Image (cartoon, rainbow, N blue to C red; front, side, top):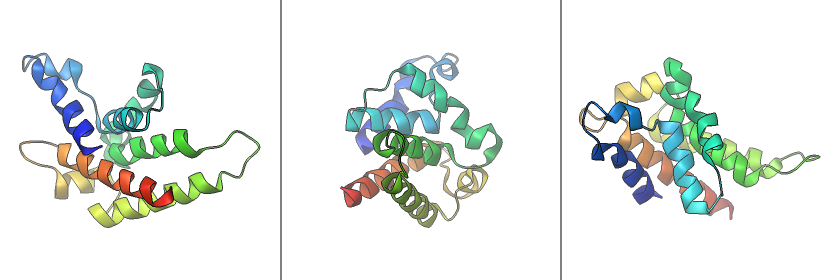
Length: 142
């Protein structure tokens, strides 16, 4: 999944610098797109648009968009049709949040940007590491 995230992060680089903001994908979008490709989730653009507001920590530097995009993937993969208690989805979600917080020291975008954002790559390393954490959690649950 790391390679998918890396490729998606670099897609905007094919455009001129003034055009890049038009093609930028935020943390949540990258994580959900990567999971979609890795796990063949069959998501269309509407799913990606649905997580767009999650980027930038809910556009407010709150909960990290990468974590939220990864959680959206877990919901798609593990939430059951109703009626259900969704025990497995809840267990996997909780594990992902715990592992993410262990990795980054916090779940808030502001904190993560201050401590883990790269001067040259922005939050791309955070997205890559989040994808690795997500993949590990999914493997452990399978």
